[in-house]
Image (cartoon, rainbow, N blue to C red; front, side, top):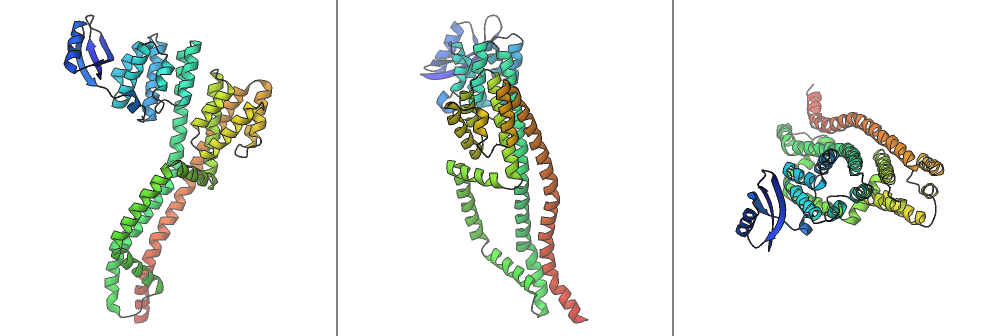
Length: 398
């Protein structure tokens, strides 16, 4: 038996869709016509186990959540809302995922249960909030809260990536400029200087020797660089490599502070969203750990979980962990003592998200002049080294 997804029009002129198992497509078409459904599109579907391993862009998930929230708030039942979104979604893989969710919900599963099949697409916090919304009957408000959370998280992630990619791009451009000058520009200067018959200044000779070495061995250097890049990429994709990189980044000046503040903001925002949605504190900490993209903070949250479970307060535990600023732990203790922990966490998240934005803006303004100085010194140094013989010969001629 093969699983097919279908779309068709019933006797009332309404579009219907679903997923069903049949021996072949012809038998399915015959079956649909017997049900008074005129098939418009029939295609084989991939298994849920395959789709659960396929990632989906976060922007696609955000749009889906917003659209579903609008439909639910307008009074459209969940099953019909999913049918509408199947038609409106242009992402092929996500369309099949929505079909799978629609099928499970149609068979009587809870919405949150259907989402757990695709845990690579729907993060743990997403499923937890939807579960809380279904339990309380407030699906509309919960979807709005999920949308807000996803939007804030995506905005912060993009800002951090942008700030960290800038110096990497500049470094690559600098290496490319120097390589082009060594391979194409310097040999032309060398041929011009060869007829002078005098010894060259040391900087010029070093530059020419470097040019000769690069030109003679450019193939080997390219192969070695490619292999090195591949192995470094594979290592950084592994759990051990990612942990190593996270610890290095966390200790860097400027960038380490930015990552720390962004992680604290994410922890506070996630915790606040879960607590205000009715999720207990232990489960909230577990979900916060999963949402942490930084190994240092992930280990810190693991430590918090074990101690809070033993009966200690959240604020007193966080005070013993150095990665959390004193202001954060103080505000959490005040929130716990006054019964307003969720509001304090929201204030912490707002404050540190703004701090991250200010810090990224400052780093960008600082990097721009450094980039100019770096490239100017690099290219200018090479040009001066090449013009030194000309100045020397001109002085000798006078």
